[in-house]
Length: 119
Image 1 (tube, rainbow, N blue to C red):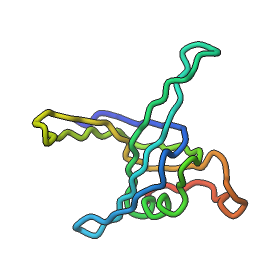
Image 2: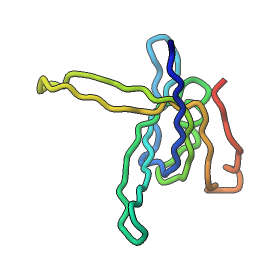
Image 3: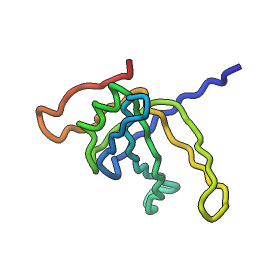
Image 4: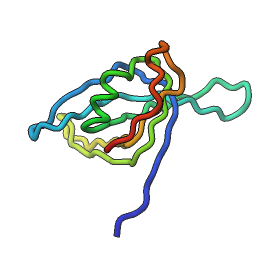
């Protein structure tokens, strides 16, 4: 039985995206989003950095339109990666596999394309 999972985050891209191609020829785009967390009004925010991965048409779109500092919203599902480091220690991280990306603010008038969903 598959569990229901859906996550939406909003924040700023921390770096320009990286577009790669898998051995099977599928495009995958990776970037990360910084989100601020406030515990009390007037406090300094804590920042979380969330890894994002998009595939195929959405990957192409993100690689052309996501830029460092751009405010975006990403909706998708969670995936945990686990690996053993060179030091022999186990590591893991949770990332979002993006199914939809929206731009919260536009940089230029010609960038004002609405939203793009994965096909």
